[in-house]
Image 1 (cartoon, rainbow, N blue to C red):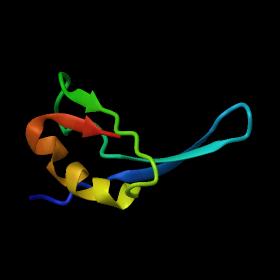
Image 2 (image 1 turned 90 degrees about the horizontal axis):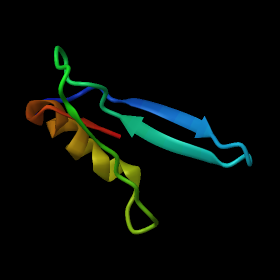
Image 3 (image 1 turned 90 degrees about the vertical axis):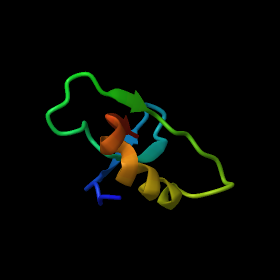
Image 4 (image 1 turned 30 degrees about the vertical axis):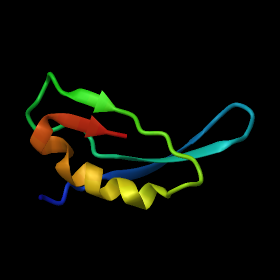
Length: 64
């Protein structure tokens, strides 16, 4: 497992709601990757997605 350096971002919707998300970014050198967007509720936090980000590039994935 590699440590993919993911970024943290906040997007603001027009009604003033902020959405926080993390992004593994595209796999280096890939132009045909698949993007997976994971939405979660209160059952777990976005910290659980760190493991997914760490495996993303090995499988030609971008995880958000």
